[in-house]
Image (cartoon, rainbow, N blue to C red; front, side):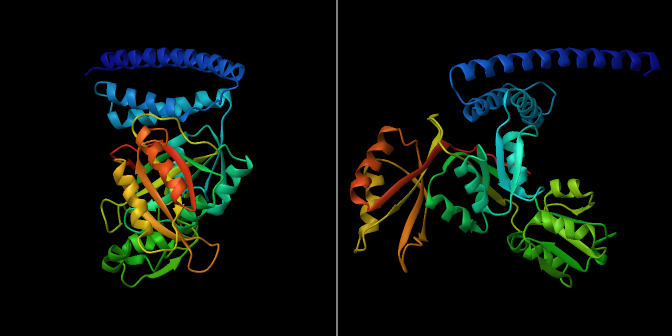
Length: 363
């Protein structure tokens, strides 16, 4: 290809970029008009369900040779920027920056919202309860390590609903300023991340000292100042701290995913592809739990998950948390909840929300 042909192609690219900027300007103008209409109607500025539907439609339509997996990322940021023009929501997440919770929050909201780091999961719940944050993002379940206890207990305590869920592929990276694995003497990470990588560490860094940290992001910061140290953390943490990634996907289970939930003061409207989370107690008598579970079966409601947790009210007293298919407004689910409200000493719906996509989002 001669230089004149290359210059012509570059001019064509420049013209397209100019056209896209013009279209972005028009989109921003429309976003401002929509914001004005919402304010006039006393409606919330941010509509997660509308955004979810738009992204799904664009991904389904595709853009020819443009990579399909990039469409969501591009439009995620466009929509986030337009939201910032209207009134960016305040989002609290389990910090610090660079954790998987941070990555999940960015996947849900993009870069343009107002983020607030919380030191604990309870801190995220408190921020949403008080109205200091419009939404919160916390992990609730990992496919290899099970439930996140603090998140389950905070949900059961009430006053906050699940508005949306996100299943994020957990890609643990080993990052360090060391030149190679042979120079790594210490590995820093959160206890759960170390547990998820214990087999890989035993095989590849059996002589390294394992050092627990409050978060994977804190581990990355430790590795920055330790020439013989490495961290197991997110690729985002590596980018934020300027750490080279020595190995990717060091987790023992290839299909390691974490389920995150978006918290809000209200749950989501029905979409026809929903899930409901509720908590209930049973009477302390033989067969009580079986009789409760039979109610779901009699009404054709499928339970996808159930677990027990201490009630924290008195010793040896337990409550149950369950996920079921369907929205609380669906006839079958509503009927089952109605029966259980009469049979159970306590029952609370913790949120109805759209089910996550079948394929997890990669971190």
